[in-house]
Length: 238
Image (cartoon, rainbow, N blue to C red; front, side, top):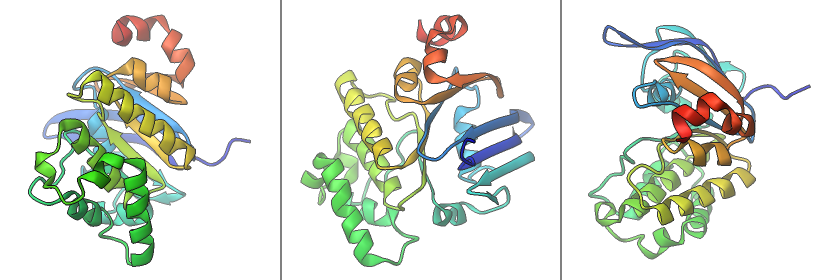
């Protein structure tokens, strides 16, 4: 028997104004998996992550996380439950230092000694952040800002990490570095739901994948199978 999913989207629909952005999405993520969502711009990938992290309201369906229905929970509540979101565009606090950003990532936590230990862990995982911990975050390079966004999300000590377009706008060498970090994170037991424009890289990194088109899931399966699928190759792998 397969383990109970950590995350289950059950018929989730989301509207943006008068537009139906997601239409009855069914999706599961099991503990310690890396699952990727691929699709064209506007397919609904970011909307899916924002619905899970409760930034967006859900019109229909349920979001079940660790056996709990979180469909009506607020964003800060799901952070406490163990979901962290590293958003598209990084959204770091540009006028604060690297250290300030990381400490704010742990704002829901009261275990100060453990927070201190987790800061050291982030500096071990992201050595460049250690070198720049007193630097104003807005002066970091794009790759360093992406590392900070991921590290800040990890400071809430999540069970589930939602990663939205971590390679966006980055040079190929930095992209490889980011994906090496993602592969390292999976070995620590963090479950990852990854939205990524580079479908090839995403599927190489993931266990399973879902293909979104116009707010619907049109294909899903093991990542290796999707890499070989003619429809995926023609549409997303060039």
